Image 1: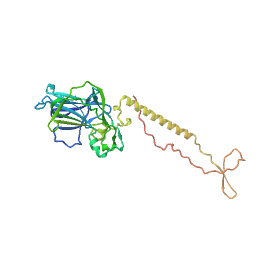
Image 2: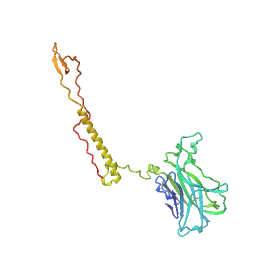
Image 3: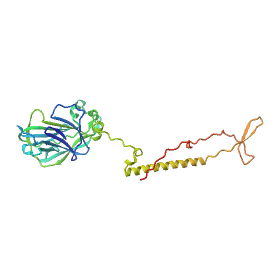
Image 4: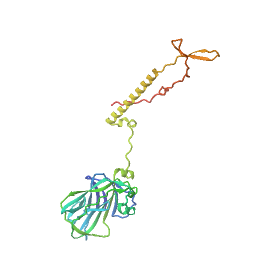
Length: 329
């Protein structure tokens, strides 16, 4: 949980606190009212914000404290905390999406992570405006202000802003593979009040850079998952029963392959016979004439090709295959 004095803020993903990591890329801030964290996002998961104000907070001239959420720079609703909301543990606020009015009925846009869709540049894209439009993509922000209540407010007609596809060049190398989206649900209409902020900046600002686990690993925010050693290289006493069974299966397959290879070599050796020696005689001019063996004296003389020695690559070269240890379950 991010803590700034008496104020705390936390991102909740699918009902559980999101894993938080320090942002080492940002220079150390001397502003005691600002904190930046990385949080792990999960595509398809709903998210919201939990805000807590400590019981030691003292009201002065403000009527209430306002906690507001901004998602990718877009306002996504806020709630007030007044004096009577405090208890022995302080006060808590949940920011779970903007409430607006549609056809006289209450609607709320629940917040959800979704896969980021990237694209090439279109004709309508203006790279000069990429910084303004996409610089806060991948960022959640919670601001806490002291406010004065100035009267009754009117329900908003804001329906949320979808990110849509993003030009690849607009990311500028940021490892983003998720964005935020909205899911409308029916809710009762709430009372709205108009307020005026006190001071020139929030009393507390929490910035959460949301990234998937894979993106956090690419940024070296968290360690990459180590590559597991092959079963054959791991100590036997560390293997589970399932791993032992898999190792035994592999060893048996290797033994079967080795046995088949040995049988094949024996079969090949059995089909090779030494050629019979050729008969020879001297010709009239002293030349050597070779004769093919034949059961008939009248067989025609044939030209004999030179003898070629056939080498079998699979013949035993004197080396032995490595032994394979069979592990019994």
